[in-house]
Length: 563
Image (cartoon, rainbow, N blue to C red; front, side, top):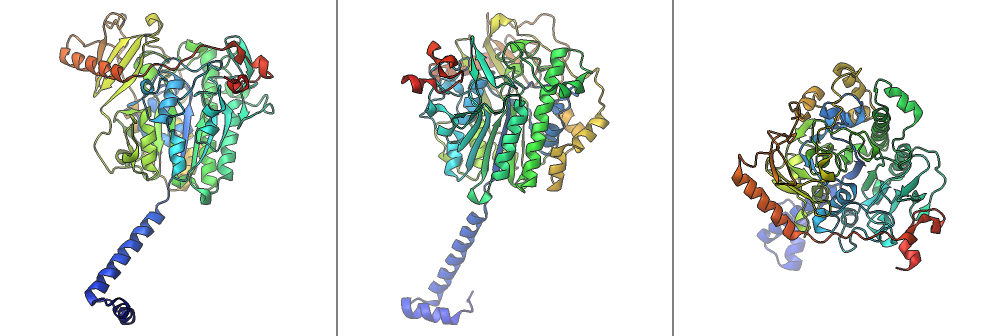
């Protein structure tokens, strides 16, 4: 092909003594380079909003089949996004949050045992690079709102030292929803901070609404010209508050649920309702700022729900076995979804095995980065599968956790799960309701109208988002089991138990004797993981950390004590 540029050709011929063929090759190469640079410039990294609920049960969302507590905003995201139906993590909040932030199993960071208590001098290791630090290198503007719980005894462990521009929220594991005081082992003090400053000004303001307002302010003030937004919104809801008043919600919200007879479940329902409203407000603000169409939204619980009074709470994992801080499905299998405008077949159920450690590489890949550059992590990238660019399951096995302090370990490979040991002497190795599928006042037709009228659905409709059929989605995401057995044949403290989770998601029958080869295979997998674990980092409590020595505020006390 000859280019009609004789004047330019004569110039290059004269100056560089090029032939016509050489000039054509130069022009073709130039066009290729310009097109490449144009495509690179055209790629816009998506905003990322990660909403983490605390202690929400598997059965506390509508898309898993329970209509007892309406969650129309969450369900609107599920109808237009992808439900993660084989989604797992560890059964406690500090370990699970460490998995999100590091892409590593807690057994590989020393975060596997129990949680961090405010008077203990330890946290997520400083030599490990965190998700916001990776995103910062890609130009993201990183903000955190809500719970941290990954170390606060020293300023170097706080969010503003770990990749976030700013953090508004609390540093410990729980607090009062209205006074913002946190009580641990007889010590109490304010735990609400604006960056490194203590915030006494929000007394009486309900935490879920407060954190929502702060998230809205961040979105409102975000300038896309400064880079894409990463907002980590880690709610207190629906975790228990302090022991003297564990379940808290505004009175007017509690009144909406008078049809729920159990008082604790009624208040819990109001807490979930406020959480759902929060999600609607965040999505609406993204829409108002014209950011929604370019945003990835993740919604997830941090672990299974504390049901039937566990931790003085009233969540439901029905029909799954167990509760928070147990190795059973009710402790490690979580409610989760992802929404984006470019997902393959939105409004569907994703059945590939996924672990919380996968968020780091998945979001890193979704941001357009090369995941092969991520070294030493346990997570895998699901984004190609979620967006239809690959049909290969990214993950086939995982370790739910190994906590030798509590005395259990659990692994999964394909449909098979092995549980060795348990917690609380087996007292919570049962099935707890409510099922939420009877004695409610909302039918499916009315519920779908609630979804359509939600802030989330309206905001998604404005950008032309596609929705799946909610009835079909719920049918696929709903876990169905027969009635629990009166006596289980699984005795995990005597001998490890083997389950086929695809056939027996409620862990009714130990099939180790029926499948000895699989039993041996998974027992070896557990032992292999044990050989890779590092010692837990837990430290004893220091009585000098008591907030009474610091103006009744939970603070980075070790800095003041110079230890």
